Length: 270
Image (cartoon, rainbow, N blue to C red; front, side):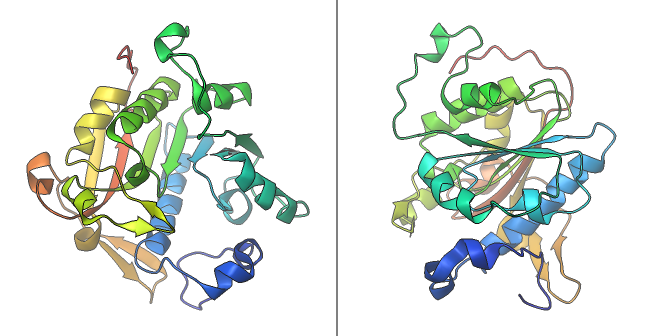
């Protein structure tokens, strides 16, 4: 609603409801994170090896499928709890899509009774198998947006997620997520009743080892990301990617973007 907003979401008020309007949040990281994700998606959509699939893991009340123009060939997959979609979908019934398609993938993460990954032919279980069942094509370059997710996952859960993303990603795919360093976990941050339990000082190594993504940029959010309200954009200042040594022992909020540059045969087990 601001005249100098970084993005326009005509559905935000409807989806937030009275509870959300009474208790707004996000000025520090959520708003710039959303705009960063928008820019990341557009760049991958427009590049030479263009991405035509978007996967939102932990989609929440995201409305990119409705609010982002110029992505008419994009297929959007939203993965989240069935209870989330039970609230969200009735509010979107009469809304027009801005993309080619939007596919809802309900998956109950709290009731994971899948067989062990090693017992399946492709090493995929849980939400990843559901994604395939709902029509996701692993041969098409894909953008993965994992916003507000990894800090709520254990180290093992993060490795499993990255492994699945790697197996499902064609060359040219890219992933963006926010995260925190390992020492930041000790601050015992709690958001909406959910504590931060996961962080790492070396996301570049994790994405390479677990997913086969060869190029990763780890960004210090406070140092390199600035909100330019006058021009309604983000300024991302040039700088080298943070290393494990840069992150060790520091309480940092991170933006992480990683890409799968070429054919990569990934055989690492969960």
